[in-house]
Amino acid sequence: MNKKIILTGDRPTGALHIGHYFGSLTNRVKLQDEYNQFVMIADIQALTDNFDNPKKVTENVKELICDYLACGIDPNKTTIFLQSQIPEISELTMLYMNLVTTARLERNPTVKNELLQKKFEGIPAGFLCYPINQAADISIFLADKVPVGVDQAPMIEQTNEIVRKFNRIYKTNFLKECEAILSESERLIGIDGKNKMSKSLNNAIFLKDSDEEITRKIKMCYTDPNHIKISDSGNVDGNVAFIYLDIFNSNKEENESLKNHYRAGGLGDMEIKKKLIQHIIDFIAPIRERRKYYENNMSKALEILKNGTKKAQVVAKNNFQKIREIIGLNYKDIF
Image: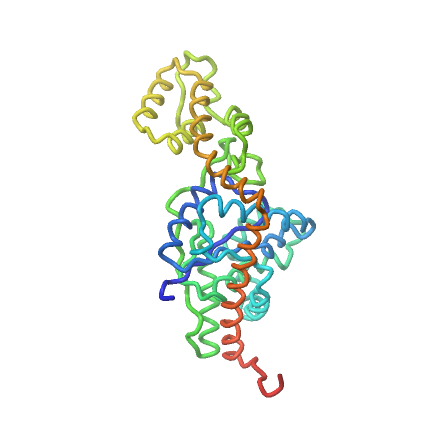
């Protein structure tokens, strides 16, 4: 009960990949022993840019819960819940909208970057208000810390602006400012060698991929386009095969030896890729097997999600009741 609170989560727009594993999942497994951790499946936020395809969002809820459990997120230590089933988040989002100008939202660097990527013909109000909804997610659970990538740090800054303004206007200190836990690892490059690994860019290796799928993807991965003949000297910088080898092969001496051989010439791309394929298969196989257990016992996985959501509902309801009282929206003499 005395542990500090962490809130984190993902949008259910697809299964998780190895970039997620190293970027956030391993950290969550570690943090759940030290903190009271809430992991949110953010289906409402996923609808801000998938409003015309809600089935994509709802079907991927099952993908996320299976990935979480397969990677070691323990429901006895971590509360896994579904955002849409916490109505207090939406109501608090509406109240927070009074505390933020549209100009401030448009200046948010994370929003600006994502708007450039999405290329909307017109900006949906829901997408523009994404930082407000995220502030409600965080503060409804009175989270002390929020693990994020560097690109998401402006969202935490905006959350704390809203919290400070709320506390100042209503003369309270009930809401807490939160601290960003910045990821220590850079986002993993995709197999294309051009972009960070992403579900939408078709450049990812998923935690549920079969051996055949892993093999196919690694054979396609970017190496050195100028390394045409085996005898040619090759460049290891920006070479996806070697980037992944450094991650998945714990034998660092062997990795350095392979790099030197590649630079000198006489080592083919396919030989490197064959070694890499086996390392990745060995890594993913046990995760995939645990995942299959929950896929085959989906009722058990959904029961975990249901129980976690019930727990989150109680916390959110109690905290929001206090927020209502602070604002003056209690009407106890009427209702």
